Amino acid sequence: MRIAVNTRLLIKDRLEGLGRFSYETLKLITNAHPEHQFFFLFDRPFDHEFVFSDNVTPIVVYPPARHPILWHVWFEISLPNVLKKINPDVFLSPDGFLSLKADVVSLPVIHDLNFVHNPSDLARSHAWFYNQYFPKYASKAARIATVSEFSKQDIVTQYGVDSSNIDVVYNGVSERFKPLTEAQKQLVRAKWTAKKQYFIYVGAIHQRKNIERMLLAYDHFRTRTEEPHQFVLVGNKKWWTSSMQNALDSMKFKDEVIFTGRVSDNDLNNLMGAALANVYVSTFEGFGIPIIEAFQSGIPVITANVTSMPEIAADAALIVNPYEPSQIAEAMIRIASSTQLRKELVLKGQERASFFTWKQSADLLWRSVLKTVEG
Image 1 (cartoon, rainbow, N blue to C red):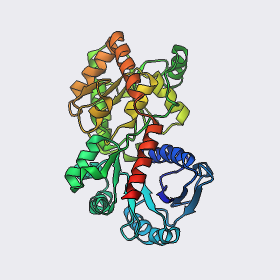
Image 2 (tube, rainbow, N blue to C red):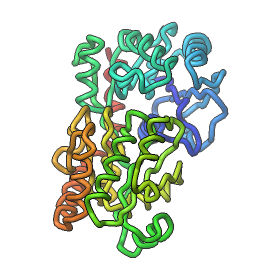
Image 3 (cartoon, rainbow, N blue to C red):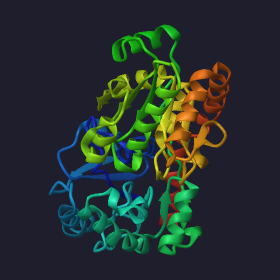
Protein backbone atom coordinates (compact mmCIF):
# COMPACT_ATOMS: atom_id res chain seq x y z
CA MET A 1 0.00 0.00 0.00
CA ARG A 2 1.16 3.53 -0.80
CA ILE A 3 0.30 6.03 1.92
CA ALA A 4 0.83 9.78 1.53
CA VAL A 5 1.02 11.69 4.81
CA ASN A 6 0.79 15.41 5.54
CA THR A 7 3.82 15.88 7.83
CA ARG A 8 4.17 19.66 7.68
CA LEU A 9 3.94 19.91 11.50
CA LEU A 10 6.96 17.66 12.07
CA ILE A 11 9.31 20.53 12.89
CA LYS A 12 12.55 20.12 14.84
CA ASP A 13 12.21 21.29 18.48
CA ARG A 14 8.65 22.53 17.85
CA LEU A 15 6.49 19.46 18.39
CA GLU A 16 3.39 20.89 20.03
CA GLY A 17 -0.03 19.17 20.21
CA LEU A 18 -0.70 18.16 16.59
CA GLY A 19 2.97 17.77 15.78
CA ARG A 20 3.46 15.50 18.79
CA PHE A 21 0.49 13.36 17.71
CA SER A 22 2.00 13.11 14.21
CA TYR A 23 5.45 12.22 15.52
CA GLU A 24 4.43 9.56 18.02
CA THR A 25 1.88 7.75 15.86
CA LEU A 26 3.78 7.88 12.57
CA LYS A 27 7.03 6.69 14.13
CA LEU A 28 5.30 3.57 15.46
CA ILE A 29 3.17 2.93 12.37
CA THR A 30 5.99 3.17 9.83
CA ASN A 31 8.26 0.88 11.84
CA ALA A 32 5.48 -1.63 12.47
CA HIS A 33 4.50 -1.89 8.80
CA PRO A 34 7.63 -2.22 6.64
CA GLU A 35 5.55 -3.89 3.94
CA HIS A 36 3.93 -0.53 3.10
CA GLN A 37 5.44 2.59 1.53
CA PHE A 38 4.94 5.97 3.22
CA PHE A 39 5.45 9.33 1.52
CA PHE A 40 5.98 12.13 4.07
CA LEU A 41 5.02 15.51 2.63
CA PHE A 42 6.85 18.42 4.27
CA ASP A 43 6.38 22.09 3.50
CA ARG A 44 10.03 23.02 4.17
CA PRO A 45 13.43 21.35 4.57
CA PHE A 46 13.02 18.60 7.17
CA ASP A 47 15.12 17.06 9.90
CA HIS A 48 16.17 13.51 9.11
CA GLU A 49 15.07 12.33 12.54
CA PHE A 50 11.56 12.39 11.06
CA VAL A 51 12.44 9.81 8.41
CA PHE A 52 11.63 7.03 10.81
CA SER A 53 12.38 3.98 8.68
CA ASP A 54 13.50 2.75 5.27
CA ASN A 55 9.93 2.64 3.98
CA VAL A 56 9.54 6.42 4.38
CA THR A 57 10.16 8.68 1.37
CA PRO A 58 10.37 12.36 2.36
CA ILE A 59 9.20 14.96 -0.16
CA VAL A 60 9.37 18.73 0.26
CA VAL A 61 6.36 20.51 -1.23
CA TYR A 62 6.65 24.28 -1.46
CA PRO A 63 5.74 26.90 -0.39
CA PRO A 64 5.96 26.74 3.42
CA ALA A 65 2.35 26.88 4.60
CA ARG A 66 1.94 28.89 7.79
CA HIS A 67 -1.01 31.21 7.14
CA PRO A 68 -4.35 30.95 5.28
CA ILE A 69 -3.22 32.17 1.86
CA LEU A 70 -0.32 29.73 1.81
CA TRP A 71 -2.48 26.96 3.26
CA HIS A 72 -4.67 27.35 0.19
CA VAL A 73 -1.68 27.39 -2.17
CA TRP A 74 -0.09 24.34 -0.54
CA PHE A 75 -3.18 22.17 -0.27
CA GLU A 76 -5.07 23.20 -3.41
CA ILE A 77 -2.28 23.96 -5.90
CA SER A 78 1.02 22.34 -4.89
CA LEU A 79 -0.22 19.21 -3.16
CA PRO A 80 -2.58 17.89 -5.88
CA ASN A 81 0.31 17.74 -8.37
CA VAL A 82 2.49 15.80 -5.95
CA LEU A 83 -0.29 13.42 -4.97
CA LYS A 84 -1.01 12.72 -8.63
CA LYS A 85 2.62 11.63 -9.10
CA ILE A 86 2.65 9.50 -5.96
CA ASN A 87 -0.75 7.94 -6.74
CA PRO A 88 -1.34 6.85 -3.12
CA ASP A 89 -4.02 4.47 -1.89
CA VAL A 90 -4.82 6.92 0.89
CA PHE A 91 -3.87 10.42 2.06
CA LEU A 92 -3.51 10.67 5.85
CA SER A 93 -3.60 14.17 7.35
CA PRO A 94 -2.87 14.28 11.10
CA ASP A 95 -3.70 18.01 11.31
CA GLY A 96 -7.12 17.68 9.65
CA PHE A 97 -6.38 19.66 6.47
CA LEU A 98 -7.19 18.03 3.13
CA SER A 99 -6.77 18.86 -0.54
CA LEU A 100 -10.20 19.39 -2.05
CA LYS A 101 -8.77 19.26 -5.58
CA ALA A 102 -6.81 16.05 -5.17
CA ASP A 103 -8.55 12.90 -6.35
CA VAL A 104 -7.45 10.66 -3.49
CA VAL A 105 -9.13 8.74 -0.68
CA SER A 106 -8.54 10.85 2.43
CA LEU A 107 -8.42 10.39 6.20
CA PRO A 108 -8.10 13.60 8.25
CA VAL A 109 -7.56 13.66 12.00
CA ILE A 110 -9.79 16.49 13.19
CA HIS A 111 -8.71 17.07 16.77
CA ASP A 112 -11.36 19.58 17.83
CA LEU A 113 -13.80 22.22 16.57
CA ASN A 114 -12.95 25.06 18.92
CA PHE A 115 -12.92 27.41 15.92
CA VAL A 116 -16.62 26.69 15.43
CA HIS A 117 -17.57 27.48 19.01
CA ASN A 118 -15.02 30.20 19.78
CA PRO A 119 -13.87 31.84 16.54
CA SER A 120 -12.62 34.88 18.43
CA ASP A 121 -9.91 32.69 19.98
CA LEU A 122 -8.14 32.74 16.61
CA ALA A 123 -6.94 35.46 14.28
CA ARG A 124 -9.86 36.48 12.07
CA SER A 125 -8.22 35.11 8.92
CA HIS A 126 -7.53 31.75 10.58
CA ALA A 127 -11.05 31.42 11.98
CA TRP A 128 -12.50 32.27 8.56
CA PHE A 129 -10.35 29.64 6.84
CA TYR A 130 -11.17 26.91 9.33
CA ASN A 131 -14.89 27.58 9.25
CA GLN A 132 -14.89 27.86 5.47
CA TYR A 133 -12.84 24.75 4.72
CA PHE A 134 -13.24 22.20 7.52
CA PRO A 135 -16.91 21.48 6.71
CA LYS A 136 -15.69 20.72 3.17
CA TYR A 137 -12.90 18.52 4.50
CA ALA A 138 -15.39 16.61 6.61
CA SER A 139 -17.58 16.11 3.56
CA LYS A 140 -14.70 14.97 1.36
CA ALA A 141 -13.17 12.58 3.89
CA ALA A 142 -13.74 8.86 3.37
CA ARG A 143 -13.46 8.53 7.16
CA ILE A 144 -12.50 10.86 9.99
CA ALA A 145 -10.36 10.18 13.05
CA THR A 146 -10.55 12.31 16.18
CA VAL A 147 -9.09 12.21 19.68
CA SER A 148 -12.07 11.89 22.05
CA GLU A 149 -15.69 10.83 22.21
CA PHE A 150 -16.50 14.49 22.89
CA SER A 151 -14.90 15.60 19.62
CA LYS A 152 -16.57 12.73 17.76
CA GLN A 153 -20.02 13.85 18.87
CA ASP A 154 -19.15 17.47 18.14
CA ILE A 155 -18.21 16.58 14.54
CA VAL A 156 -21.45 14.61 14.19
CA THR A 157 -23.47 17.57 15.46
CA GLN A 158 -21.67 20.36 13.63
CA TYR A 159 -21.03 18.67 10.27
CA GLY A 160 -23.70 15.98 10.07
CA VAL A 161 -21.15 13.18 9.63
CA ASP A 162 -22.44 9.68 10.34
CA SER A 163 -20.90 8.57 13.64
CA SER A 164 -20.04 5.17 12.13
CA ASN A 165 -17.55 6.97 9.86
CA ILE A 166 -15.64 8.54 12.77
CA ASP A 167 -12.96 6.68 14.71
CA VAL A 168 -11.77 7.78 18.15
CA VAL A 169 -7.96 7.69 18.36
CA TYR A 170 -6.99 8.85 21.83
CA ASN A 171 -3.69 10.64 22.33
CA GLY A 172 -0.97 8.88 24.27
CA VAL A 173 1.53 10.01 26.86
CA SER A 174 5.29 9.87 26.48
CA GLU A 175 7.18 7.45 28.71
CA ARG A 176 9.70 10.20 29.42
CA PHE A 177 7.20 11.65 31.92
CA LYS A 178 7.74 9.89 35.22
CA PRO A 179 7.63 10.58 38.96
CA LEU A 180 10.70 12.21 40.50
CA THR A 181 12.36 11.40 43.78
CA GLU A 182 12.20 13.99 46.53
CA ALA A 183 15.87 14.80 45.95
CA GLN A 184 15.22 15.37 42.24
CA LYS A 185 12.27 17.61 43.04
CA GLN A 186 14.40 19.73 45.31
CA LEU A 187 16.96 20.22 42.54
CA VAL A 188 14.25 21.32 40.10
CA ARG A 189 12.77 23.77 42.59
CA ALA A 190 16.22 25.18 43.34
CA LYS A 191 16.66 25.87 39.64
CA TRP A 192 13.26 27.40 38.89
CA THR A 193 11.45 28.63 42.02
CA ALA A 194 14.08 29.41 44.65
CA LYS A 195 13.26 26.06 46.32
CA LYS A 196 9.54 26.89 46.72
CA GLN A 197 6.68 24.51 45.97
CA TYR A 198 4.65 25.46 42.90
CA PHE A 199 1.59 24.79 40.82
CA ILE A 200 2.20 24.34 37.10
CA TYR A 201 0.40 25.04 33.85
CA VAL A 202 1.81 23.57 30.63
CA GLY A 203 0.57 24.61 27.22
CA ALA A 204 0.24 27.52 24.85
CA ILE A 205 -0.33 30.90 26.47
CA HIS A 206 -3.54 31.25 24.52
CA GLN A 207 -7.01 32.69 25.11
CA ARG A 208 -8.78 29.34 25.21
CA LYS A 209 -6.37 28.04 27.83
CA ASN A 210 -8.07 30.35 30.37
CA ILE A 211 -4.89 32.13 31.40
CA GLU A 212 -6.63 35.16 32.94
CA ARG A 213 -8.85 33.12 35.26
CA MET A 214 -5.95 30.88 36.28
CA LEU A 215 -3.99 33.97 37.30
CA LEU A 216 -6.95 35.31 39.26
CA ALA A 217 -7.45 31.90 40.89
CA TYR A 218 -3.82 31.78 41.95
CA ASP A 219 -4.13 35.25 43.49
CA HIS A 220 -7.25 34.06 45.38
CA PHE A 221 -5.32 31.00 46.58
CA ARG A 222 -2.44 33.09 47.89
CA THR A 223 -4.80 35.59 49.52
CA ARG A 224 -6.75 32.89 51.33
CA THR A 225 -3.80 30.79 52.54
CA GLU A 226 -0.38 31.30 54.02
CA GLU A 227 1.17 28.85 51.57
CA PRO A 228 4.06 30.51 49.65
CA HIS A 229 3.64 28.26 46.60
CA GLN A 230 4.45 29.86 43.28
CA PHE A 231 2.71 29.43 39.91
CA VAL A 232 4.83 28.35 36.95
CA LEU A 233 3.45 28.68 33.42
CA VAL A 234 5.37 26.75 30.77
CA GLY A 235 4.61 27.76 27.20
CA ASN A 236 5.12 30.18 24.37
CA LYS A 237 3.63 33.66 24.92
CA LYS A 238 3.03 34.06 21.20
CA TRP A 239 -0.70 34.71 21.78
CA TRP A 240 -0.34 36.95 24.83
CA THR A 241 -3.19 39.47 24.99
CA SER A 242 -3.84 42.79 26.69
CA SER A 243 -6.51 41.17 28.88
CA MET A 244 -3.96 38.63 30.10
CA GLN A 245 -1.57 41.47 30.87
CA ASN A 246 -4.32 43.35 32.73
CA ALA A 247 -5.07 40.26 34.82
CA LEU A 248 -1.38 39.88 35.66
CA ASP A 249 -1.00 43.58 36.50
CA SER A 250 -3.99 43.43 38.86
CA MET A 251 -2.52 40.59 40.92
CA LYS A 252 -1.30 41.08 44.46
CA PHE A 253 1.09 38.14 44.05
CA LYS A 254 2.17 38.69 40.45
CA ASP A 255 5.83 38.51 41.46
CA GLU A 256 5.25 34.86 42.41
CA VAL A 257 4.16 33.97 38.86
CA ILE A 258 6.93 32.57 36.65
CA PHE A 259 6.70 32.40 32.85
CA THR A 260 9.39 30.04 31.59
CA GLY A 261 8.63 30.32 27.88
CA ARG A 262 9.27 27.22 25.80
CA VAL A 263 11.61 24.75 27.51
CA SER A 264 13.49 21.61 26.50
CA ASP A 265 11.83 18.21 26.83
CA ASN A 266 14.08 17.40 29.78
CA ASP A 267 13.19 20.62 31.61
CA LEU A 268 9.50 20.05 30.85
CA ASN A 269 9.60 16.56 32.33
CA ASN A 270 11.36 17.85 35.43
CA LEU A 271 9.11 20.87 35.88
CA MET A 272 6.01 18.69 35.62
CA GLY A 273 7.34 16.01 37.95
CA ALA A 274 8.42 18.45 40.66
CA ALA A 275 5.16 20.44 40.74
CA LEU A 276 2.66 20.23 43.57
CA ALA A 277 -0.16 19.93 41.03
CA ASN A 278 -1.03 20.67 37.41
CA VAL A 279 -3.69 23.34 36.81
CA TYR A 280 -5.25 22.71 33.39
CA VAL A 281 -8.62 24.42 33.18
CA SER A 282 -9.10 25.35 29.52
CA THR A 283 -12.46 26.49 28.26
CA PHE A 284 -12.24 24.09 25.30
CA GLU A 285 -10.18 20.97 24.56
CA GLY A 286 -10.46 18.15 22.09
CA PHE A 287 -8.32 16.05 24.45
CA GLY A 288 -5.86 17.84 26.78
CA ILE A 289 -2.53 15.99 26.67
CA PRO A 290 -1.00 17.79 29.71
CA ILE A 291 -3.65 16.12 31.88
CA ILE A 292 -2.25 12.67 31.23
CA GLU A 293 1.35 13.93 31.22
CA ALA A 294 0.74 15.10 34.79
CA PHE A 295 -0.88 11.75 35.70
CA GLN A 296 2.17 9.93 34.32
CA SER A 297 4.46 12.29 36.24
CA GLY A 298 2.80 11.38 39.51
CA ILE A 299 1.27 14.76 40.38
CA PRO A 300 -2.37 15.72 41.05
CA VAL A 301 -4.46 17.49 38.42
CA ILE A 302 -7.06 20.24 38.55
CA THR A 303 -9.04 20.36 35.31
CA ALA A 304 -12.27 21.72 33.85
CA ASN A 305 -15.76 20.27 33.74
CA VAL A 306 -16.29 21.18 30.06
CA THR A 307 -15.72 19.59 26.64
CA SER A 308 -13.37 16.56 26.65
CA MET A 309 -11.59 17.10 29.95
CA PRO A 310 -13.93 15.13 32.25
CA GLU A 311 -13.78 12.26 29.74
CA ILE A 312 -9.99 12.19 29.78
CA ALA A 313 -9.50 12.79 33.52
CA ALA A 314 -12.40 10.59 34.69
CA ASP A 315 -12.31 10.40 38.51
CA ALA A 316 -8.55 10.96 38.76
CA ALA A 317 -8.61 14.78 39.01
CA LEU A 318 -10.35 17.60 40.82
CA ILE A 319 -12.84 18.92 38.27
CA VAL A 320 -13.99 22.54 38.46
CA ASN A 321 -15.97 25.15 36.58
CA PRO A 322 -13.27 26.92 34.52
CA TYR A 323 -15.29 30.15 34.43
CA GLU A 324 -15.19 30.49 38.23
CA PRO A 325 -11.74 31.48 39.54
CA SER A 326 -12.99 30.86 43.10
CA GLN A 327 -13.58 27.17 42.27
CA ILE A 328 -10.11 26.83 40.77
CA ALA A 329 -8.64 28.49 43.85
CA GLU A 330 -10.61 26.21 46.18
CA ALA A 331 -9.21 23.16 44.39
CA MET A 332 -5.69 24.57 44.77
CA ILE A 333 -6.31 25.07 48.49
CA ARG A 334 -7.58 21.50 48.90
CA ILE A 335 -4.51 20.06 47.20
CA ALA A 336 -2.05 22.28 49.05
CA SER A 337 -3.58 21.48 52.44
CA SER A 338 -4.12 17.71 52.18
CA THR A 339 -1.31 15.20 51.80
CA GLN A 340 -3.89 12.41 51.76
CA LEU A 341 -5.83 13.97 48.89
CA ARG A 342 -2.62 14.38 46.90
CA LYS A 343 -1.74 10.72 47.44
CA GLU A 344 -5.20 9.57 46.37
CA LEU A 345 -5.15 11.69 43.21
CA VAL A 346 -1.65 10.54 42.29
CA LEU A 347 -2.62 6.86 42.55
CA LYS A 348 -5.79 7.37 40.51
CA GLY A 349 -3.90 9.47 37.99
CA GLN A 350 -1.18 6.90 37.42
CA GLU A 351 -3.80 4.22 36.89
CA ARG A 352 -5.65 6.47 34.45
CA ALA A 353 -2.44 7.32 32.55
CA SER A 354 -1.85 3.63 31.83
CA PHE A 355 -4.93 3.70 29.59
CA PHE A 356 -3.35 6.25 27.22
CA THR A 357 -0.32 4.91 25.37
CA TRP A 358 1.09 6.02 22.03
CA LYS A 359 1.12 2.37 20.95
CA GLN A 360 -2.63 2.28 21.45
CA SER A 361 -2.94 5.55 19.52
CA ALA A 362 -0.85 4.21 16.64
CA ASP A 363 -2.80 0.95 16.52
CA LEU A 364 -6.13 2.79 16.49
CA LEU A 365 -4.96 5.18 13.77
CA TRP A 366 -3.68 2.30 11.67
CA ARG A 367 -7.04 0.53 11.97
CA SER A 368 -8.67 3.74 10.80
CA VAL A 369 -6.31 3.86 7.80
CA LEU A 370 -7.22 0.28 6.88
CA LYS A 371 -10.94 0.95 7.20
CA THR A 372 -10.54 4.04 5.01
CA VAL A 373 -8.80 2.09 2.26
CA GLU A 374 -11.25 -0.80 2.46
CA GLY A 375 -14.16 1.62 2.16
